[in-house]
Image 1 (tube, rainbow, N blue to C red):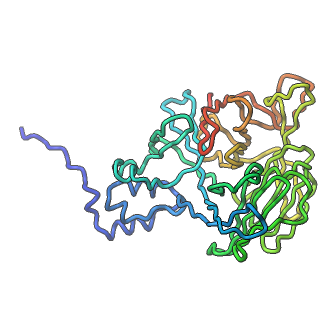
Image 2: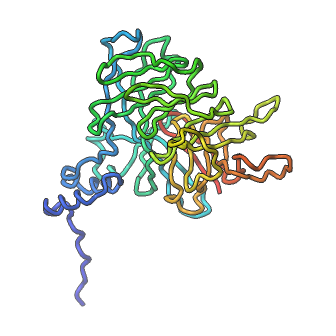
Image 3: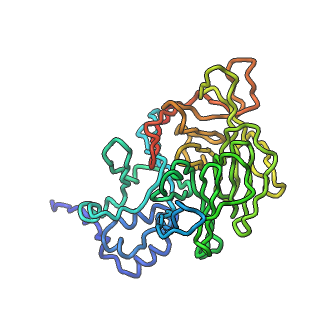
Length: 382
């Protein structure tokens, strides 16, 4: 009897250039399928451009050591894409692991010389205190969380001590003209691409700025005094947004360009503040009316609030039973390493507790394995 030989696997590197061009043209640039396709072989990698959504454009900006004078010393502002990685668990009852942080292209000599092209499907995870590890993206579900901007190389003391964050807005579609807003406690500094010189923004509250964000082409800044202002990037006009938050600790959470949420933290009147016992009030911006409107339902969103910034993702893209569900808030920067998602109307068993607020659900315990920049590592136990 003749022996049946197994079929020879196709040599994808021999695919005609015309077909490679069609594949490249039809790949979604905002999908990691582009990265997977580039990992097939060297010819595919050279024919399919690196996805633009993973590129990290940068801008050289003057130092602010002696603002408003222009300095010859430059600093780099970098746009960093952020993602939520969910490691696919082998069983439904297993804990889900999540990595929240930045991702970029590895251009190091080590990567180019030692790693074969299939490892284009891998992400090198660098967690402070441990050696870098490679994580196969084919074993993960990856959700985009948008991006944030970061200054690479802070300015001289003493101003670096008060550095709190930076926000960037393009003024045209090509990105040639832009405005940058930087937070230095009671000082907000603004730079336009037309002047390339830092100036102190006028007419802001006389208080420490706690957070800055961008939403639909405008800057938003919150202050410990409870005030929130909206800043027009063209005129640099500052307007107060009403009503002001009732609580001194609050966060701005953009949900793409769909919504801007305000999360206010309410601490109970206790001698010792217990992070797990606080409650929250959540509002969304009614841009047309120019005011905040309280909400009790976030829809399919999960809000993340922490050291990497504040972000939102759609729970529709997460499978049922993965530990993170719709209409919830997850704080990742508490004093301890254990937290729980916040839900609205949680029954605590205490009749005196108010149900008309957001509080810890005490379900699906979240263990924060690492909270240092640039990656937050979470394990959600079900």
